[in-house]
Length: 423
Image (tube, rainbow, N blue to C red):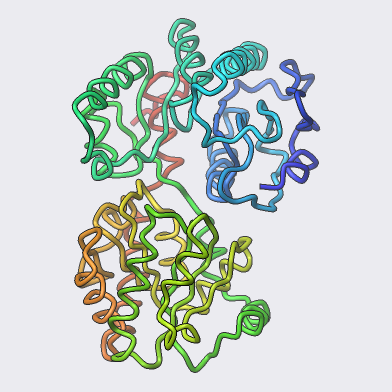
C-alpha cells in the first residue's frame, strides 16, 4: 500500500505524516448517518469490499478508518473519495507488531477512533479484527454508547487445533469478553462460524462477509500486458504452469510444493513452477530446488495487482500448500481467472469453494505424497480442461449465494440501523 498515494486520493484530503492524525470533525453537506469500517491496512480486496458497501448501502455514509501501516506487501493503489479514508497510525506502525509492544500508544489510538465516531454521526461500526488494544477500547466504548459494532474476521477452526491448555484458557477469556460486547460477528464461512461458536458467539448473529476481490478484473485478460509479463519472466506459451502466490514464509509450506513438483516433474515434462511473492524464506527455498529442475522454476518476487493478474492468466493451476491459512483470497482470484486450485484442508476459502476431485483438489496439510498425487491428478492432459470448467462454475455458484453487501445489510437491519423490509 502506497500511503502517499492513498492520502492524495482519500476523501477529505487526509494525509499520513509522522505523528499526524486525521481531523475528527469534518465540514460536509452530506448529512447521512455514518457507517465506520475500521481496518489495519488497505489491501486491494478490502478496498473492493468498501467500494461495494459504499455503492450498495447508499442510506449510510461510509467512513474508512485505517489504523496501521503496510504489512507484508506495499500495494500501489488509488482510493476513491466515496470511501472517505482517514488514517490513525504513524509511518512504520506495523499491523503485525504485538498489541502489547506499545500499549499506551495503542490506547491513545483507540481514543482517537472513539473521538472520530463521536464527531461524525457514526451509527454503526464494522471492525476488521479484535486483537489491538485500540480496537478493544473502541469495542468497549461502542457497547457502552449503544452503537452497534460487528467484528469481521477470517478466523478458522482448522487453524485452532494445536494450542496448550493455558493458551486456550487465556484465549477463551479474551474472546468471551469482546463477544459479549459486540452486536454480531461477520465470519468468512463455515470454518469461521465453527470457530466463533466455540468461543461463545450467538449463532443467530453470525453473518458471512468474506474477503472480496474484484472478480471481473481478474477474469479479464489483457493480452498485451500478459505478453509483456511472459517476456519479462521468460515464460513460454508452449509450457503449462503451476502457480504459487503469497508470502515466502514457513507457514505457507512452499518447501512442500517444491518437493511435490520434484516428485511429479518427470511425469509432467511440459509443466513448470511459477512462484510469485517474497518473504523471509526466499533464499532458502531457492536453494531447495534440485539443480536439474532450476530452469523449470521461475521466481517473480512481489507483484503488484496488474502483474498478479497476468501471473494467473499465464498459469493453469494454483497450489496453496499452507499449514495455516484462515481464508486465502488468492483462491477466489485464481478461480476467477479460470485456474484449478489445489489447496490444503485448512484453507478456509478452499473449503467453501472446492469440491475435491471435482472443481479442484484438497489434500491433508503437510502430506507430501497427497499433494504430489493431487497435482499429478489435475495436470493430466485428459483432466485439466474439465477441472478448469468446473472450477469456474463452482466460483459462480458460490458467488450466487454469498453476497457480502447483502449480509452487511442484513446485520444492520437486525440491529435497527437500516429499516426492515416490509413483505
